[in-house]
Every structure is written in C-alpha cells, then in structure tokens.
Length: 86
Image 1: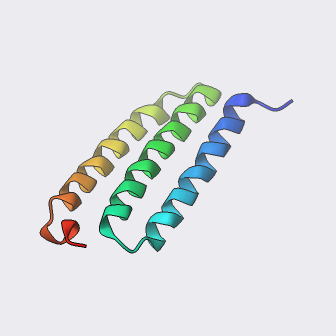
Image 2: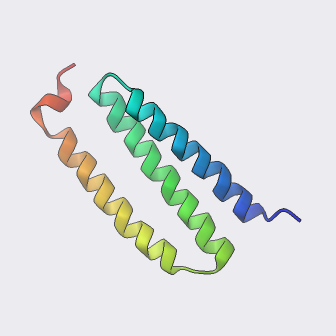
Image 3: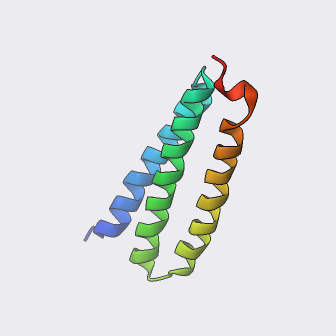
C-alpha cells in the first residue's frame, strides 16, 4: 500500500529539485531569488511530510533552522548592490 505522506514527500522533493535546477539555469539574479525561495519552501514542506510519516519531529526542528538560515542568506543576497541590477 502506498503511504500518502511518503508520496507527498517524494512529489515535493522532486518539485524542489526542479526549482533548484531552474535557479541554477536562471540568468537574472531576481529569478535566482524567487527560485531559491520556492526551493526552500518546498524542501521545508518535504521535511514536514517526512517528519509526519516517520514520526520523527527532530527532522522538523532541524529543517526550521536550515530554512531560517537559507531565508537569511537570501535576504542578505537581495540587499547586495549587484543583486538588483539587471
């Protein structure tokens, strides 16, 4: 039987991977910021569904820290002078 939590974690993981590929191939820095934000959100969602599926909420605690660091890095990158010039 297919576990719905693991299936949703797989789907969001694949979507996060595709968002990361799109971010690497992006030409404009603004596109990289948007795809980076989307990738962090999707990876966080994937970690949430895995934490629920495996009943290991330590995964969720670690992902919260990683997401905060990633969002902080994106805010820092967006404030750089070369990030806004296209």
